[in-house]
Amino acid sequence: MSLPPSSPVGELPRPPLLAEVDVVGGRLRLIGRLDSRTARILHSAVSGLLLTEQRRWVLDVAALTVTDHTGLRAIGAAYRRLLRHDRRMTLSGTSPDLQRVLTRLRLGPHLLDDDHAEPVPA
Image 1 (tube, rainbow, N blue to C red):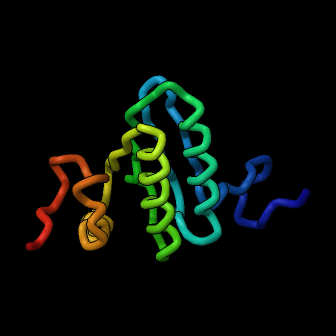
Image 2 (image 1 turned 90 degrees about the horizontal axis):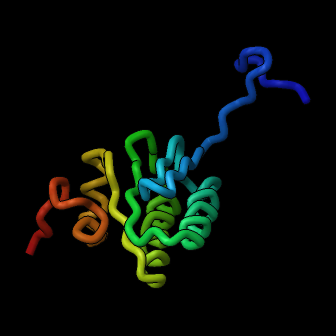
């Protein structure tokens, strides 16, 4: 296997999206880019979450960049999928831009914690 020139010797290149799961703490941390190429990683992570007894999950998106509509749809799909299995998910570390988009999509009140949820315009 040859490494890309930008990678230090002996260090593998970082994947475009990394999912870290803390089952005991009920946290899923996403690091990297969520887009059409990486949405399946979030889907797979949610599959794993559904195998646990944990009912409430916090999705930490502080180190996540959502780059296209597929990425946004993946977040909504993850929320709905967990909800169908009587689980709850809230987002933590959302950027102001992501908060605005989620609010426009009417997902803000469902996904953002009370401290970050923007009021939905009437």
